Structures are given as C-alpha cells and as structure tokens.
Length: 89
Image 1 (spheres, rainbow, N blue to C red):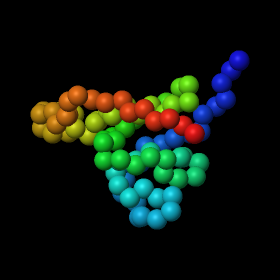
Image 2 (cartoon, one colour):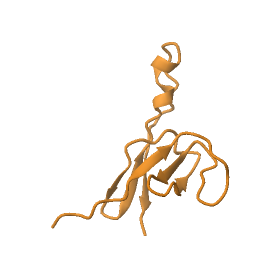
Image 3 (cartoon, rainbow, N blue to C red):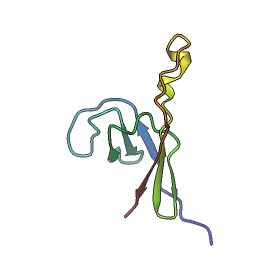
C-alpha cells in the first residue's frame, strides 16, 4: 500500500522575528505551507534533505556553509556529523 504524502518541509537558514510560528534562530525546520516552526535547536546546523520514515523525522546536519570553498580552502566542518531523529506525533 502506498504511503501518504508527507508534509513539505523547508529548512530555515534566515533569522526571523520571534513570535508564534516564527523561528528565532538560524537552526530550524519550518513547514513550507504554513511557515510554522516544527523544530528549532542550536545543534541543527544547516540541516538539509529532511525525510520522514516509519513515524520519525530525520534531519541530516550538512554544514554546507562550513565547507572549504567558503573558507579560503580550509574546512570548518565540525566532526562527527549527525543525523537527528525525532518522533512525529
């Protein structure tokens, strides 16, 4: 049986005003259709390509802004990289 389509998510990389449904930091995931913050945490540094599987939201920490091309050939990536997992309710 096919799975139901998951809600479209977008990674928030821009600071936004605080308030209901607004991310107040650079490290957040928001719903694309409502612009509502789903999760916000300082550890979510440039998460990209979120996916949903078996009732969990997975968020890989890409740190794309820390690659060598953006820092005069010197990587700023902090190891180990992480994939965060959150139970959906």
